[in-house]
Each structure stands twice: as structure tokens, then as C-alpha cells.
Length: 105
Image (cartoon, rainbow, N blue to C red; front, side, top):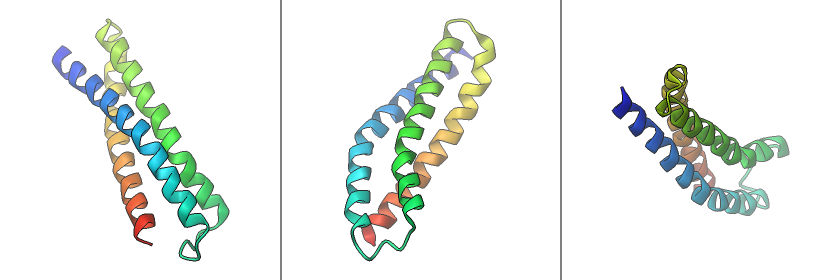
């Protein structure tokens, strides 16, 4: 169980680091596409996409924190760590697809 928690916590920290690198690139793509006619999305959608990466950063930080708590003996934090990691992985994958789609537009 402890080895699994270590791997889950490391994964959360890795995703957090990648998101911190990904944030400026994603915002640059959004800024560039917002001014073009190719982006046929309302302003609300563009703002929601701009906030997607910071929200995922908070989610990754929460996941990493819960993982550390679980490693330090708070066994009740082990299950939420695993669930958050699965959700985080799929949300990051979805965001990557959106970013590529915007870049290709």
C-alpha cells in the first residue's frame, strides 16, 4: 500500500510540474486564437478554457497534498488520492486535446 501511495504522490507532483510548464503555452495559444476569426466560441468559453489550467494545478496540488498526508499516516486520505489522480489524468488529457484543436484552428 505504501509503495502505491508513493507512486501516486510522485505522479501528482509530476503532473503539477507539467501543468506549470503548460500554463504559459496554453495561455499563449488562447490569446493568439482569441483574436482570430477561426475561434467561433463565445467569450465565456474562452475564459473557461483560460481558467482550466489553473484549476487543474489546484487539483494536482490537492492530490499531492493528500498523498503526502496518506504517507504520513492519515490512511483515510489514500482513497481520495487515487480518485483525484484518475480524474486529474483524464482532465489533463482532455485539456491537451483542446489545446491541440485550438492550435490547429
